[in-house]
Image 1 (cartoon, rainbow, N blue to C red):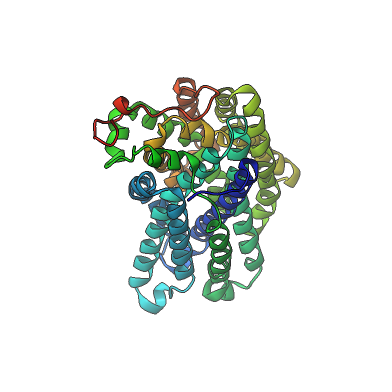
Image 2: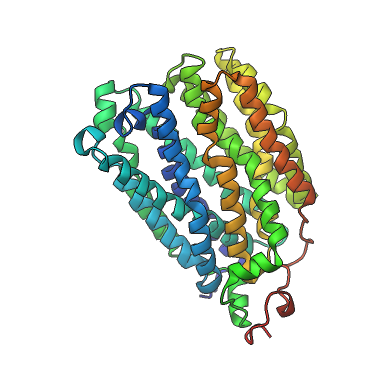
Length: 441
């Protein structure tokens, strides 16, 4: 598809569409994490030991991340074959449908084992959807941006993650005040059912944007790959591994602060979920503000220095965060979240431009999808369950901080090894470096 809109205007429209879609997708994904922390153990996984039920519930949260590579493979292949725009419409529809269904599932007491089965299947659909969503939105944004605006546009799009998380927390904050019997019977369902309205808005916006100019150029040249994933593994395997490693630190930091913190507050600090959300929500605004600022900074200084600085901060900030949380004083707890989120924002803001341009345009969707989704498995997927396990084993907050710092070190190494693209137009895709199909020649 072509467009007559000026490049700058089209770039803004693409950022807006990507941001709206990413916000909705992460809202849907985040409300599951919140419900898994405090609701689902009682509704779908009842056991005699509340902590065991919470562990099982948080493991179901991780299933969504395990399913993401499948979505990355399928949608990465299709994204490199048919284009970015069609994939973004498909993934948003899948995510919204699965989330709405979760809000309708009867409890374990009503339909027995079928309830958690339907829940987990719906979570898998969410994971498959998100496996293609982030990469597609990233590529549409970065490939529409000029070379001097990739950091800023990528950062603006990435604020959708924080915005979705804030919306999810606000939605649950509104129902956490209900009596327990109402919260567990129907109150928790409201945030899931509201997703239908958000998805309709997102689809209307996404249907109006143009296809990525980079993909359009690949198509014009006849360089569409038959099996792009094989080309990626043959010629860009190193980049896949480094993107996977680079994703881990920020993924663990985000999931531990936005999901596990509710469990930690309840078990270790004796605080209610509402009280923890009251600290988390204002701190989360830091990500919405800082991510695009660090993106704009990277357009001036380069992406690698900002990424590396953010990863290095994640080696120290978890210890500060837990120490301030343990004071149980609102101001100090808020400061702990803010300090951790600043470093996280610097690291995460670089994901779109730093990671996507590590791959040639013809196989970029597949390469980014595989690397990023594998990184979320090792990072986001089981971070809450690992955190709960460390807490249950008596490891204390130091063990939790060491776990977070260790993943930050992995991302730091990846940032030092990953090459930053030259400040020029999209890297060329020479035929002889990918495969030898007639179309490529």
